[in-house]
Image (tube, rainbow, N blue to C red; front, side, top):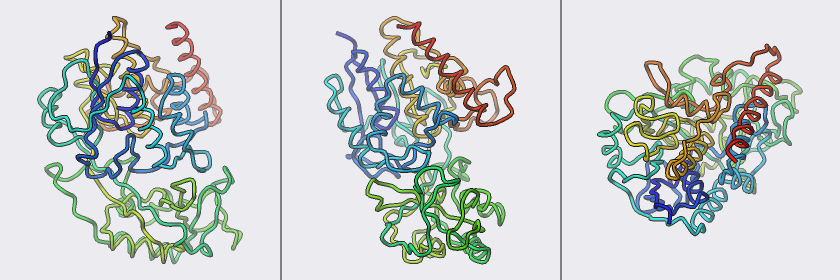
Length: 436
């Protein structure tokens, strides 16, 4: 019988790691502290809970996020299958019904005959072989144990956007459309004229923020990829108009013109009864969120079913402690996966779980671990985590800037990105055929 493997954490990375190990024939003991204990941001008892957004980003192949999904599909990703089964309309993006997505993932994991789920918090270093996927909200007790082995974890702060009920919106002030008419009007748009925008920005920048709990000593570092909207607004009066409230690609059907600014709402579920405020991650006090966001046309009577929150995220100084296959440098049978490694994003986390689980299974079978070509997105992300040479290691999501440039110059961006994706998939297919 194959050796039992411990996997810590049933988030996206932990689920994918456990799935890969079980597919390879290894019995897995998957530890998850929910529902006995919840992190500051998690609320649901199910696995693979999505917190910051229900969007898993673009699905098209000429995007970095789309390429990542295609690579994951070739490895038999469990969560990509769950996402496609729970998909809700979102233009060119892959967005899901959060509860259905989690239910499908939980059902698959709990139903696998080689996976045993233990609903308790793990508070010590796991014995090898193991995958640590305790996430960006790793419990303080376990984080303290990691410090002795991996060095001092770094921290940054992440913020989640509010969710409102559709039936509380003033639909006379909104219009349904996707930018440049891509998709089938999957977003609700709240247009603003210059006077409305000016007043909104003034109120937002003066609004009272919720106190940040002392997860870390000193001032919190705010991660650029999930910037609280009030922090972005404070950078300049027009920062929102060139960021989450940009009006490009939209035309207000009432005026026939492009609005001065637009707040977009994206559906949260298949029933289209809940919508999140796109790009409006925030740490304002709850009363301030209702007051200030209620100034947006269409939201004056909005019912907030979830207010925005800000919470801690912890990740390792991975270039100092991890190898390119996500294994610990000083213990080859302990792997890390997910945002704790310094990848950023739901699918990025899941992809690292795939590689961690796959590579641990290979190592236990006496095979060399799989190091993906640097031209692939999964390979580039793993190399970033292990080989970053800058002074300040920060989380990184999928982007074409991680890939080596093409030998030929392609001026048009969409064509260039598509060529990068095609090169990546050809290299990955060649590697996988060689491994068969």
